[in-house]
Image (tube, rainbow, N blue to C red; front, side, top):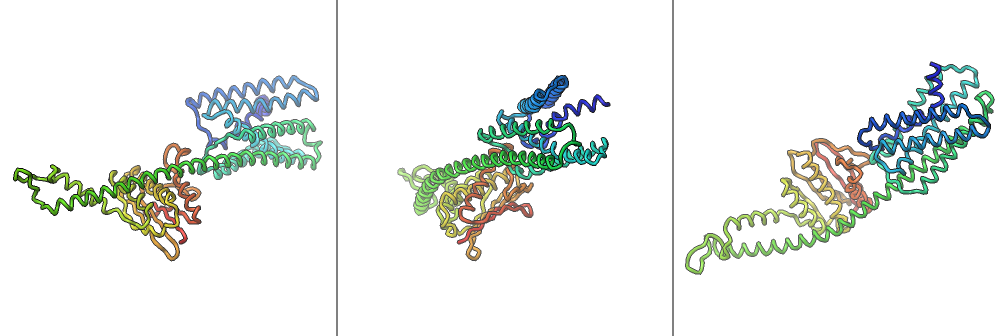
Length: 453
């Protein structure tokens, strides 16, 4: 029993460091044969730690021991980073980021642990059972708190884009300094009995504060990088939408021309009589004089009747996107029921209208097709309420989407490369000081937007 306790005591840093990785599992993408990789890395790290601590037990001297301890802490932490790289699909910089994060978590936990140990030693009532119970309770409480904090901060997009090398180099140097200070404080006293209260308090507060500041700087840098990358993607999508709008506008204009030409042609043909057109030999053909059959004419009339149902809302950009998306929906067995006063949106730029309604209608159509909803109608309304313009786009749903931070979470597998459509919508609404609300009620998902007139 004593040998087991001695083993865990001497190699406690390694086990505590491994535990410190657990709140970060939401960010990890495991490789194939994960169990085999984990076992190999775990026993490799344990063997390394055991051999290193065994060799340190034969060392002595006021300089050699602290140097060996510094080397042990740094090398063990580096070895866990290598293990993380082997077990999870991530680059070296990202693995190093999580390795530093785990070490800082472990060091904060170590300092908190030293507080209750110092209290026990100071009052002279140290009890192994009570100490172990406190240790287990503190471990669960601390890392549960860390996990919940991280999940709350990154719940909508638990991903990292890390390319700021200056932040990482600064974190590495600061972490190494924390290791050095930890070893110095360790060898400044033999046990808690000869430690001054003031020194202990200052040292503990200073260590926890430094680790917290380093963590805050690292995660703040990551959030800034993620926001910058997200801004670049949304901007690219916006510029692409601008080009697509110009192309769609030309297509709709060409469609209008063809529509009026065909309508004029059919009207002219009807004036010649519905019973057929006489040919040059005195006979009667069963279609037009150019050989077009009545069946072809009827199909053309059907298509034209569909086109005539497209509304002219009073806003050219809105007409373009509604025409385009309605035709796409009808080709897939869906329909768009639209009542819109486009003149209410005249203060919006054309590309903003095209992007805003395009994303909303695309999301509605994708939802209907994905869930095979029995109701395949998309409702679109643009109405006036007092001195405000209200936009409402709704569709039926089978499974209500999860809404996080005011935006629906994408259901596509690759979440890191999707979900930018709704963020683009949010950006456009904020541009005009409007309000955007996603909601779901009675198996119907709605996008509600308010603009001041």
